[in-house]
Image 1 (cartoon, rainbow, N blue to C red):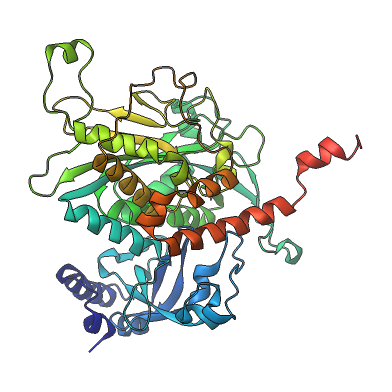
Image 2: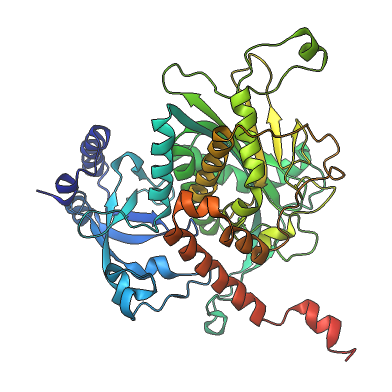
Length: 486
């Protein structure tokens, strides 16, 4: 029996998808297939196999080293992998041992920018079939399973801001290499500051069209392409999808955009706030709702409206939705390390901007953390969490939302009143740094129980390694501030 069959890893849907995959590989004469899994940062890692080998390993899995799970954002291994337990406290993780990538056939695509290459998203397992406890796609799947046991599905729509620049110098001289290497030199595609104007869109359209066509060819549910306020900044929005799909789509979208742009002489970045003159921070707004598996009803939708409610504009959420919202607010500080996992991302939380600085909600207000959209009888009722940065791991971002919201439901929490003046409302402040966010997660008993001590300690270790490297660097600010004065 194959590894997949022995451990019952594929559903009937995946079995059928595997048959279609084999036909497509033959019909299109594909030469290679990329097997990838999303790591702890939401970055795709994996191997490229010639098509015949990829098909042969489809049900047997493909080996990959466990050190892929031990990397920080500089791709340094930050766990002592050659000690007992490999720094993870697990025999299976020591010595840079191998685990297996098992493809999910339902994710198969042919890459438009590399038409002889196929792509498969994988889950990773130990040799005995157990899922790796640090694999974030599997963590998200387990959270979705818990949600399904309650009779609900998670629905998410994505609004993703990012920058596309003209690539002037890729900085590929040997001396530019490093860990990390020197970033590329770029120039603008537009001067910005003319939000949603056709003129600015037309300036960026040659690059945006290239990306748009390939994103649609991948089968991603793109809705709109927009120019944002900042220079060379844009936003892509996606139709709401259920379950795993929105997280998988986000991982593929980010990777695809960077690859497509680079092949055409551009540099795309999902870094929140690039260190470039006049650059504006980018966010990732997550629209979310829960729907009943039994009848498909939106669990956040308010069903009744009294005369008094109508006079006040209507009740925006059901009692269930209000408690879910309250859970997001209650766990906002501890979950920020999942929604905003980089040091750079905290430079976006600024007062009197289009980003939040405290844990509050409001009706159709873009200054709050959670913007509530909907009214009684509106099946599109949803919560737009504006806290995230576009570099976030989507599996952890979405898992943290579901877990937080359900805790609010279980405890029947009250979100309080709508904050109509978001930067004046008294409320709990969001963390002002990654260090503060990590500390909030470390001290949070809820996430330690919901995600497990093992994973929380693992993730904190990686984030602390990133912070420690940052703290060891002398910044431009320090040089200007102290070098001449003291």
